[in-house]
Image (cartoon, rainbow, N blue to C red; front, side):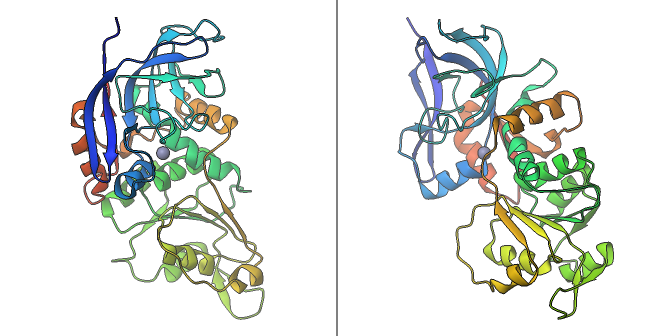
Length: 338
Ligand SMILES: [Zn+2]
């Protein structure tokens, strides 16, 4: 006889409810894990505000836990293993299969090194819950051709901007300017490795600030001088800032875009051509990125737990979403699930 599985269920826009569901049943190719903790992500907030997934979905794709049942055909995994889930394989917690805002979650077609990754005891519950977002930042860096000589701007210090800063620092990148309108987030940016912080609401002109830190270079079209800004990670989701970052980059600059935008914007495509810019989007990650994130945390090279501002128990998931949605109050909310 199976017990109950307390689950946080998305019932519609701004409507998350805690319900008792049946515990999942093991199948030959699946594993069931007791969820330790699950982070609330910007993607969860998009769903919270806009719908996007069927009502009745259990969200939560940033979680770690311990295996309590392992299907007969699953290789190299056993009860008691602590794991993190790569949610991209089955859309776990993204409306395609139930996610981590629950006591238990079943992962079908479980494969070690693919959708299931083992984590050692030294990776605490909080660190485990932050592995997925850290991997997002790491993936963006890994697809950007970088060296220690780069002069970087991380535009926006929400969770993704902050983990990107920590990952940059771990790869030996020192010149990092972080921008945000929240002083609290800028302080975190410093803690995680930003050399300089800039608040556009109080610190004047960003272009002047970048020139002061990184110097200037000639524009290729002889139109004047540009800040010696070689690399941008755009993490705000504000369309106007996407355009601003393109304008700020030096010739041959690189911009990697990690945010999701709700509004369109206008831009002059010549800013890309005249400066020979490399502009790319980064969404999700590879299996290798995920393993690298685990290794960076395990070896202590990266610790992004300072970004956690709140913990809530699963019973208070509706409140947890309200707090995560209030960006003045929170940076990262983590929900304890057992
Ligand atoms: Zn996420």
